[in-house]
Amino acid sequence: MITAGTAQGHSKRGRDRAFPRRLFARAWALLAGAVLLCSSVSGFAAPPTGRGAPLTVFAAASLKEALDEASAAYTAANGQAVRVSYAASSVLARQIQQGAPADVYLSADRDWMDVLQQDGLLDDGTRRDLLGNRLVLVAPRASGAAAIQLRPGVDLLPRLGGNGRLALAMTASVPAGRYAREAFTALGVWDALQPRVAETDNVRAALMLVARGEAPLGVVYATDARAEPRVYVVATFAPGLHAPIVYPVARVKASRHPAAGAFVTWLATPAAAAIFHRRGFRVP
Amino acid sequence: MFEFTPAELAAIALSIRVASVATLASLPFGIAMGWLLARARFPGKSLLDALVHLPLVLPPVVVGYALLVAFGSQGVVGRALAPLGIEFAFRWTGAALASAIMGFPLMVRAIRSAIEATDRRLEQAAATLGATPWRVFTSVTLPLAWPGIVAGAVLAFAKALGEFGATITFVSNIPGETQTLSSAIYGLLQVPDGEAGIWRLAAVAVAISLLALLLSEWLVRRQRGDEVT
Image (tube, rainbow over the protein chains, first blue to last red):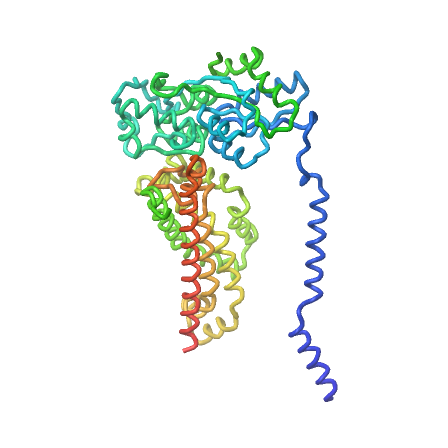
């Protein structure tokens, strides 16, 4: 009886006090197995470089449809796969500064290209101005808003209604937002407009807000307005109101891809220019 | 180094406001849902559980877009609430809504676990002593589950403080109105010499989170102290 009680007490105490060793060991084995499995999957290996590998292009968000078409044409002609990452030019520039593996960079303004050039991150010899664009004021198609003349001192607040907002890209960093702010400042209306804006991550997000009818007005590129059937242009900004909208392109110096330079050169050929021109971009 | 610009101060104040409102407003719903999932048995319970966890597994941008479609000025719910004066589009209330929804699954998980861990026999004992179900809930279940509820609230608050994807998609980035700490840091990331501002705001975010954790510790300890005496 005493023995049984002691034995029971021992094992009970033992169970309570002992570290759950078997469970722990099993958990570690499972974790180690998972890590080994993951590392053996090729997805975690560094991306292959060389002619067979896809070319990585970082491009401004406003180039979405045009560059998709152009890069598809390039792939069809040369058999070289191209993959494009679209975002605000400012975001992409910061990523390249942090070592993102881009082969080619296509920015929506010269400033961000200059930033990378000053940091020595570009193959300077490959830099060229590729495209131009115009800045426009858009409204939702269903709103039926009338055309506006963008003269100095123009009052857009009545167009926004009681609590409507003007959608545009972030004015401190994204090219489309900077051009817009520059233009409104030149017209002398930025101070009145600033409390009524909604700043978005990139120009396409501003386009989406107008397309959905959430914002009665928005500032986007003429090419964006063409690409979105749910908005229409109510005014075009005179080119003199802002810095010339220029899309420079360059090869990233750190790129090891042999086709990067060829792609940059191809973008300036008449074949590529025709594609961009059809979408509304200005080509030199 | 530690001079805050007016925009940064506005972002800090807005973040605290948005996160606090989001947490406090969703707390009753979180407790109700936690209790429902812990105690009640009904057809479709698993589906409800999955729905509650949806914001946790969906990409935040998707949640933000869904909110825009539903609660925007053109959305179904947005249009219904507009005559009542309740607006979410491009307002801090929209940021609070986005944060509340993103933090809801975390809050419910913590509260549900806490309620499941309470001894049902104590609730039954209170019932046999004549307490109504509501009295049982407020005098037995809630106090016992209190540490879990506080933990759920802290989790939701922290998530609300750090919320970015859903907020910027739903209410965009409006300084003073919807530019939270996260949006402000995101904007500064893209300005060539914004580093100093980023570190300042990050330090404030850490400080706020620490304060929230300390507050939660005190809330739990205080309640335990009451029980002992």
